[in-house]
Amino acid sequence: MIEQQLEEKKYEEKVLIIKRVSKKIPGGNYVTFSALVVVGDRKGKVGVGLGRGLEVPPAIQKAISYAKKHLINVPLYKSTLPHEIKLKYKAAYILLKPAPEGTGLKVGSVARVILDLVGITNASGKIIGSRNQITNTYAVMEALKKLKPRKLEVRSEKLDGKKQ
Image (tube, rainbow, N blue to C red):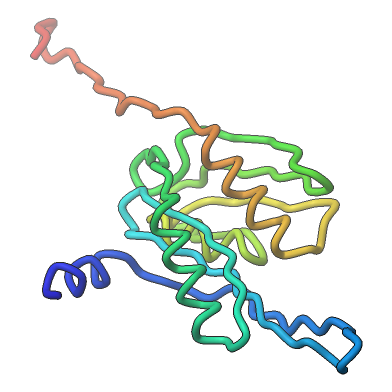
């Protein structure tokens, strides 16, 4: 029980979308809810889950449990992305770029929430071609999967002709 509470505190959860889905059946309408949730630890791990249920809380719980099972590691460079990335996923074109310290997150829609939960504080980007937030969420996740780690540059400066 205590271990589960510690695991709950380890990850932060944010609900991106809650949709009410209505389907016509012979007896009337069949109403369900779907929830899109992002889970992250702000240290390079993030996951996305989509859950469906007859009520909102069970849909959110299903989405959270799915997201926790499917976490990905994202390489970070200082507090930004290691390099620029362009990606086409279904109808969405994603462009994410690293930004200098102090810039903040200059991306829109769901990308800001995802990058925030990864732990990226400085980045700029654009999502073109799709306004569907679910598609955009999965597009950003695919872009983050394709990132490669970057090493910190170590510069050895010469003082009086000697290396340190």
